[in-house]
Length: 312
Image (cartoon, rainbow, N blue to C red):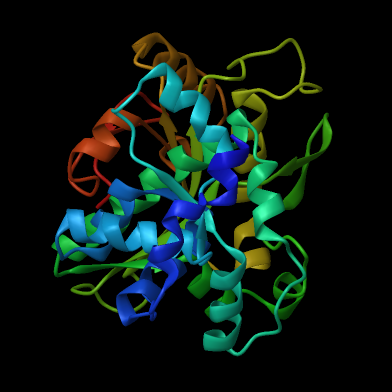
């Protein structure tokens, strides 16, 4: 593992006469935005070019310290040798380049140390979130009438200054009757801009929950983490219109994407949403296999009433 992290000496020739290209900068920006991406996801995001050449470029970016390879993935390679794409995180030189390009102060983060400290749970969850968001970005590129609105754009263009000043803008607390305040942090947030619809009715916003079946759907109470606890927090966020107050948006839906192939888990989550009074259409559920292997804008989602519905 140490040899893996140190970039072996026989690769030194890969660092000679290396110059960043515009595509390299795009790759670094994609990795920074998603935190972790594997080579297949990066190929999909770039949209053109030889996958083999892109993987070669990723190798060069790694050996020149613009990208990093979190060591936690080595255990997965041992379990399934020769079948998994390499996963990349931001490297220290990549962070320096982005700070220069975006004209922002360079944060004092040692990305090498940060990537080495990643554990399996964070690693797999972050990759799952990335796979879902990549699916939306690629799908929007295929549809001429819809554009992805990334969280960064929402934060910059619609959120009030108070939210922008927060250290964690995508975290909030909501008071739940008879239970007190609950905190919530979505796994992601984005919007869809429908270019063929009139202004005022042409944007939908979504909070993403990537469910790896690591928490129970129901518990006896709300003191422990559960799917019900999350759904209730979102339900009260909508009821109290906190989404307008905090983010300046007039609507939202919660997309829960579950990795579990067991349909009983989806049914349990639908039942949990059904028990909340009103707004069953706020909650939509789908399996990761459908989201990432098909056109995510065309698949059917199951809402809080158990009905199949499309995103638009």
